[in-house]
Length: 152
Image 1 (tube, one colour):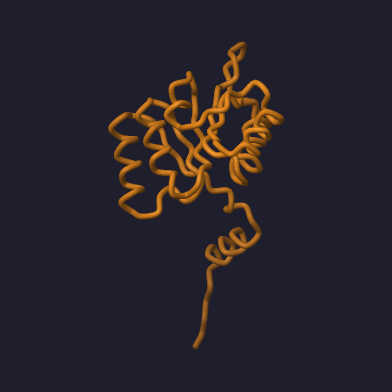
Image 2 (cartoon, rainbow, N blue to C red):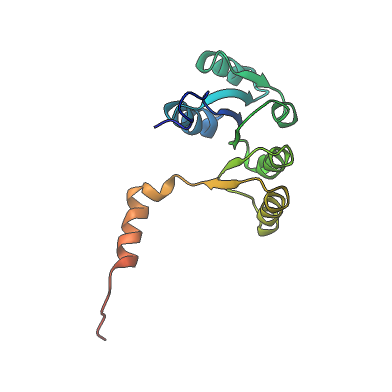
């Protein structure tokens, strides 16, 4: 499955952060789904080399502000947890929909800032939560869905 209209170019995505989440989880999923990874934010020289190897056509950006100036269809925030809110708000302010790796924010107030900005700017935001298909999460769901009758 690819995310593009027939005959249209693939959707252009920017990834903020190219550590474990950005490189191992998000980038392969995006590539496999047919997205064009057009830009990556990282200032780490080793990770810059990895981006150049993995996505030679992608622009390596030193900041989220630089990346959101590009013509992107989506931004995936996979940066350090402390940067999730500022990265998401930058993309939202630029009018770019955002997928934010967990945690969405560190406090309820931070999450509310993202939701409020999304509503105000009419820009979509969604958290990325890949754990719902792990065996422990599925087991908890099965247990929760069971009708237990306990006799004391």
